Image (cartoon, rainbow, N blue to C red; front, side, top):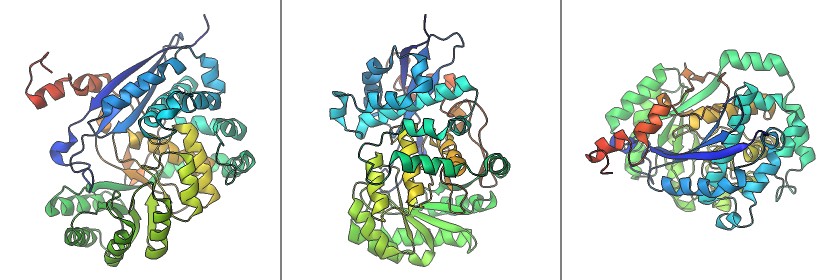
Amino acid sequence: MAEAIRGLRTADVRFPTSQGRHGSDALHPAPDYSAAVVVVETNSDDGIEGHGLAFTLGRGTEVVVAAIQALAPLVVGLPLGAVESDMGWIWRRLAGDGQLRWLGPEKGVIHLATAAVINALWDLRSRRAGLPLWRHLLACSPEELVACIDFRHLTDALTPEDALELLRRGRRGGASREAELVAAGLPAYTTSPGWLGYADDELRTRCRAAAEAGFELVKLKVGGDPLADRRRCAVARDELGPGRRLALDANQAWDVAAAVVATRQLAGFDPLWIEEPTSCDDILGHAAIARQVAPILVATGEHVHNRVMFKQLLATGGMGVCQLDACRLGGVNEVLAVLCLAALHDVPVCPHAGGVGLCEMAVHVAAFDALGVGGERGDRTVEWVDELHQHFQDPVTVERGRYRLPEAPGFGTKFCADSVRRFRFPGGAAWRRATGAAPGEV
């Protein structure tokens, strides 16, 4: 019997991070970091499975799980040969389904589900190759990677020929550059000190710890009370000193005019960027803000849901830092398109990683970008949130403010089986304790 995909296994996994206000910001005051988990099962003799996830904040995770299950008929039965050789066709099969596409297209819950499945297939490929995803992508030829990209609605900005040239040029330096990056690691910045729900004393303690741990850049959540924003920025700046950088993140809290005023009021704290200053969908608004707050950069991308929106944000100058999210885009295929677009516009890619499993994934994206697309540059940095890594089989690590490049096969997205059992919602032991219910009552 030919090797094929025999099924998709799903789980709704949630962690009660809201209890400590971890992850809190101006629009998400009490998130429970969660994941819609998918495992691709095969009939192959090696028993290797593919693991993917969609990051969520608690309520609604069950909707993403249902969307993943809706994709199953498009995936189950696919020969593994197609996964190995034609991920472009598989991506178009999922993202372009004539019925499911109506629920997007290429946005929202169905696109989150698409990302989870596509990333699980790339995880499967990487595991079967015995390589971490970033090395697996480097092992693919530029022609193979270009074939994975859907160029619909992009060719006015990026053609297959453009992408091929970028991918060929990005690999110059080869093995020596790779060895240097493995030895040095990727620069990381930390968001963990700056959640909006933290009291000033905790903010101060965490900023001090981040500085002592070697982080050169710390991100602070803003967008609440303006006086509180100024007070908290003063606390952070006092602890970080003049030698370290500060980034600000408003999480879409402001209208365009308010974003300009608020950013200018905080300019005295010398922020490197203002992140998501307004609606993630407001391309012209981002461009207007960028013009008026320069030289402070505008960073965005974690909620930008497809390559077409990235095309516009980059073309209009509204994106000074590209914070793509491998779970928000349609998985690795669409990430490849955005990496090429960012390189074309010479904009640094600093992947969003504030959430469960996202750090594990972001380091692969950033490493491949550094070695295969965008090249070495001093303004690249990858978000680090020191939460929940212990729940993954191959957790990513940061030492002295730098990501160590993963060497375990896959995309880093495989949960520990015990963590899935304990935190499966609503019946896992962690949630039975949280609700006070006896087994079987939830």
